[in-house]
Image (cartoon, rainbow over all chains, first blue to last red; front, side, top):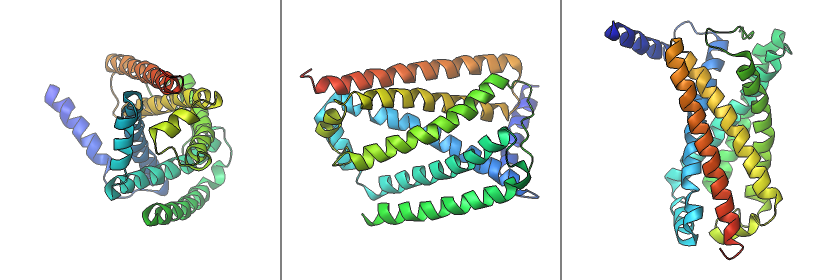
Length: 130
Length: 125
């Protein structure tokens, strides 16, 4: 019984990554979920790392020095891009939750994601060339 | 593309509303948090001294405290929604709800402690 439940859970998780016969709304759903998980992970990392502020100047300044590492900056860019996608897609979800724009939400999603792409490129250029 | 709000087995309409409304607030507060921290602070808060100095303005710790509360609410109600995708039964969901509440409360008070610690540095603590 236990193994059956576990297998079901595994199948359900695998199904999240099955790209076949997906509609645009499903992609919006997946994108929203993945960015949500990433941003929540970042939120807690952010809170833990800012704990350095309570440790005093040496701890925080040493961390800031470490954060100039290109890999950290790339990670930060990922957070920014995830935040932009989640935030803009969230506007669509917020509107349609109250029955606004349901008829054209497909186009709304595409439009918002084009905006997300443009803003992301601007951030990428700024952050990676600074 | 149908996202008409249809309630799932463990879905709670008030938590769902809380998630949507806190999401809207996060958008506003995140924009402020981001712009102020990275553009209004002269050095972009890249040293302990500057962060402490910046937190002496009472608007900053108040805004950050409210932002923390709102963002935790959104993140944890959001996680609850994702967990519900896996169709947990009601007793499992009760444990998950309790864990999410504990995580939220601990993270919030940790953040408030941090805010007071930072402000305290500027007062010779």
